[in-house]
Amino acid sequence: LGRATWRFLHTMTLRFPESPTPAERQALADFMHLFARLYPCGECAAHFQALLVELPPQTSSRKTASLWLCTAHNRVNRRLGKEEFPC
Image 1 (cartoon, one colour):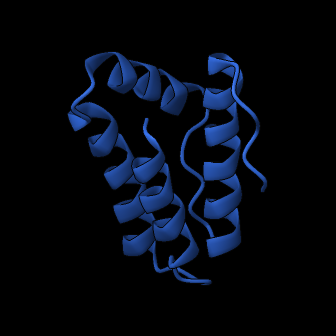
Image 2: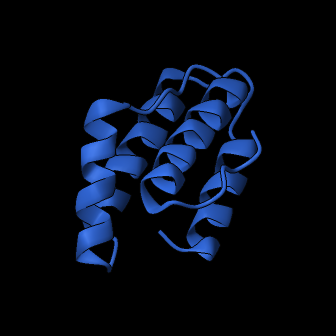
């Protein structure tokens, strides 16, 4: 995933409710799975889909969602030999 994509996803989790409703929690999880299916780079999409199987979205709070995304981002960065994103 590209830099702009990661910025968008991190901003989205940082704006996620501190105490989300069940519907908001499901919406974020659904969004991540749909995003992974529809991402224009086929190879990136496949890698992100596999990552979501290994590391399902955590949506119980803003902090949990943000830390989950940071963990996912760093797994991708390690696989690509890039520096880790500061959580």
